[in-house]
Image 1: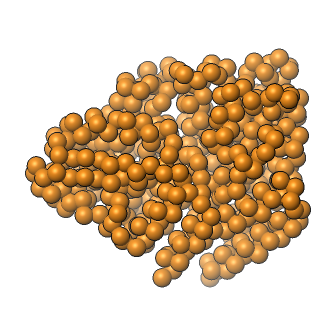
Image 2 (image 1 turned 90 degrees about the vertical axis):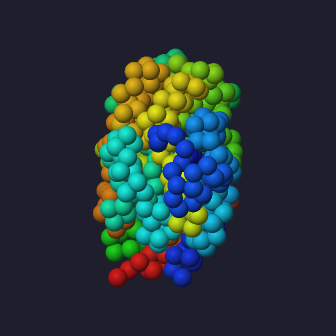
Image 3 (image 1 turned 180 degrees about the vertical axis):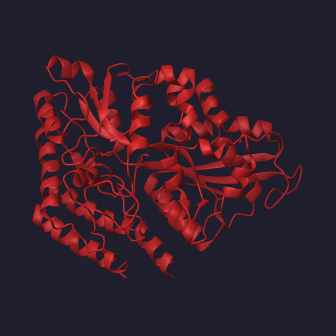
Length: 453
């Protein structure tokens, strides 16, 4: 998800539900809707999430502005919860505050269906140099609605298990192939120590925080949010087994205060040598293997652990989209094409570092010699898991939506946030698992009822 990577503000989903119910090109920006005409100054307001990949884009925007005289790109960087709330309110109301927005795979098809986003398909297909077919198929698919591409990925991710090779080797632990969660729990317990937790996992409330990894654990234990008829299936033995396992894993071998940890906190813990393992987004590897990372070269990577399924990775992308309310459509499209192009990826490698290249968006990225060398420890596995996930049925049970670590209905943000708080309370010892799941069942069922035929 950063899910990326970073996550959600409670109540944002309620707003979505309410409203839903009620290049690489060169030269100056071409004239057209919102371009202001040749030579006319243009300021593009871009709302984006506060993470490393997006900060790199902000650092490099000057390269675009130099080649596009008169165009200024104004970045408005926010924490994920704030971003979702601000962008949802602006886009749904057609206020027009933003010309370009950063949204997740969860929002794109829903917002495209609502008419809130510009259909990028004609402009992307008209530019052969952009090569829209180079975008990884699973990521392209989750950003498509009714055959139309409403957003393009800035980067994409699945999830895998990251571990300190030296720590596990010293303890006589090896992983081959895809480990089970039971194997990982045993390993975490064995290497857990006062100075280094055996594993770091997200526990912070939020559908994109706690439920990022926890949903995949639930799915591989055989659980699901809903059955094919939109009956909630939260208060089931599979959910109880998975959630109980997750808490026990954290109690035995996790960080001291797991409900305060999400992606960024676990990333810091691993970098500082305070956690031996971490199951999370594949994009994390580029940060762990960066030139300035204290654990560069010390990490190992294997697929996300499983129980009853063959794989359990998630699928997420952070994407650039253009609100239909913008008055600068042509200029916005031009910048989006530049920031998601093959040449931009090469620019990041040359200017910032090949390990910092936005992963999981284009097939050609994995053919660049410099990137293959810099990302040799994790890039092949990232490409493999991203290509093998099945967002149409990630678990054992058929589901009436497309999505792995989320349910693609407008109400899910609010459902996920409320249920994540309930389970976080259980993880923190403030409630029982039965109480958490029974309350979550009622919340989920209310949302499910709205989608029954």
